[in-house]
Image (cartoon, rainbow, N blue to C red; front, side, top):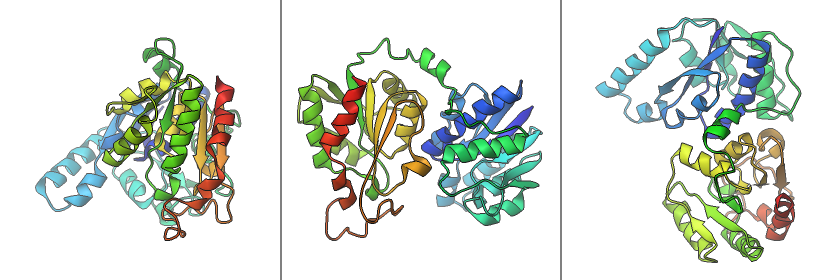
Length: 341
């Protein structure tokens, strides 16, 4: 059986889809998946052993140059590639108008969330068959496992999710070839409301290095690099990594003893690789989108408006960082982190 998945971004959302593929592979021998994904994340789906072909799309880039000849040439090439295969099933795993639109250009039966379940209800009108999947208090991974189970006609799994990255872990060397007495601090994220204060990272760094543990700091842009440098100034035991591609950072994560992270895509990759993690949540809700897997500890802010699910803090004028994060202290984080050593 050959299935097309349409889920274009982002890193965390893509990784959330892996357990559904693993479930399907257990229930339907010989099933394989092709996957439409934003070009920036094209490497990620290929890590799952059941993904046969990754079909990159460049919607983010095309929107900026919508009227250019090059954009239309690339769109036509994408559409021709998509239509070269007839699929037994096409699953829109994103539930957005843009992802539903993409399904129209593929050959096969289109299915997805119904109007009550999709992130954008109008997306449901593009599918041949729709399925209700509970939204309330339901983790994104669980919702996707249910969508795939209903689409492919088997009972949904209720076990701990398996991401299917065992082979990736082995091929990357796993933990054995690394100096495993290090933790990774994933301090960078997108929303301003997801940022733990820099002063808290520095205080945690002092606690960790005092225990003889090394720290590695990745970064993805200039702002994150500068923050990493300031945190690293605490001790020679802290190193700022050179900029990494996705495979590079995955290999470094695979070798870590543990991770401390804000709500970011790399946190979900860490969980998928089976790395123990302490994750910190202010504006977002770990019940709905927290890192899910073995040895995953969630510390959620205890504050009147948390989780607010806002990109900008309503207290922005009164504080340099979301005040909800003041309820998660470095001492609390270390109390959880030290359990992994």
